[in-house]
Image (cartoon, rainbow, N blue to C red; front, side):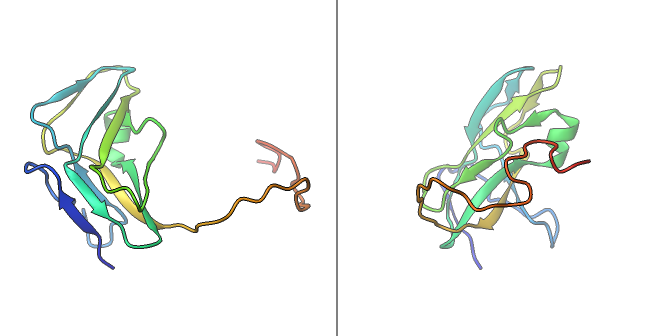
Length: 144
């Protein structure tokens, strides 16, 4: 399977794989100068690339583990979903949940994109759902 990637910014770096069996490809910040993200702030910036996903697949953007753990930078909603039919520049958004300002440098690897399959489905309204052992039990209802 191939993922077609187009540079939409001449300064963009193509994603790279950190190791032969890495599930995700590392994404790079495509910025002209360093960006500072202060504690409690979210900043969005470009990756410089757009993708042509294989049919039935989407991209999921997550922070590299070192960015989330060591630098306290995370994607605001946990992960970003890039739909198969989106053809624009993939943007990267990071929230600083730490207590120190973090500087993002041009060309820095911050996120990784994982290619995942999805299923298209129709929505059908109903008055009754099927029975299950759990039923309407919410958080913690299945034990520890």
